[in-house]
Length: 348
Image 1 (tube, helix red, strand yellow):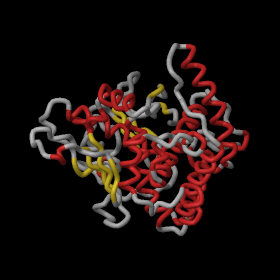
Image 2 (tube, rainbow, N blue to C red):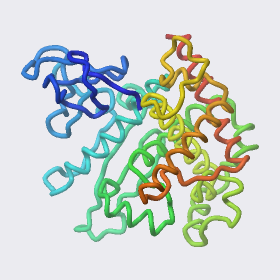
Image 3 (cartoon, rainbow, N blue to C red):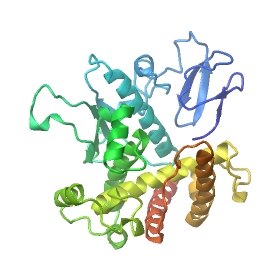
Image 4 (cartoon, one colour):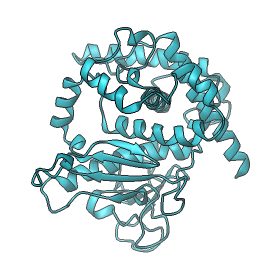
């Protein structure tokens, strides 16, 4: 997360700000410029805000003029019944988490066209709710990804339910942003690994994805993770199948790079000497650093934030100890992102 200031008065604002609390300007975020636009609070002309601004507090600029959705909201094609109490609030929380993830993807140069524009390579989100009234076996919505379509059960946006599941599944880190980063990892596996000739390297690190996926999941939920998972994976769930290992590793890399960006932007970590005149907290710059440099910088930040949390009587913010094997998998993800980003910058 970068640091932001109001373009009109210079006051500190935040990624989800709608109004500047100092000068009361209406704030609209331009994700491609990674900057806020400050306009008169009553202005209804350009730049136009996302049409979802009023109902779910989306503060992004519209993608196609007045009455249109922003580039994040237009990825969502299905939402729950908004007449059901609590559904609108849960949808809003999911969209807020999605905006954070989409912003990072944009900064990294990772394309994500909506399915409406690219049926083959497009991305789509469906935020759905369970339907207990039907009594049918398929009334429970399963969070997952298939062919660019990401489905998320909106119950995950309920803090109490998510914490209950986190505890039951023994997951030290379960957040909305984490869910979306994970599912987006499946999408980019299809685009960056399966279709770009990297399967041999992938299989050497993660295993053979052709192993029966349904059986692997069933085994994981019945028997739990393999006993030595910490020596090989970033999380217990990553041990169930190579696809899940990649998605967990992808999410973990985005956790790391976004966390490092925030730490540098707010002065919690020293900017790299390599920055020069560059914005040291810009994601394109950070990912241009050697992976070992990124890993070393993040280790220092992780120790600091964990110690800070402990001083306040809170659990570790970053409850992970990574093995050398897990680090090599993170390096693979880093190299995927760097190669794609560099190529798309040249194409642009």
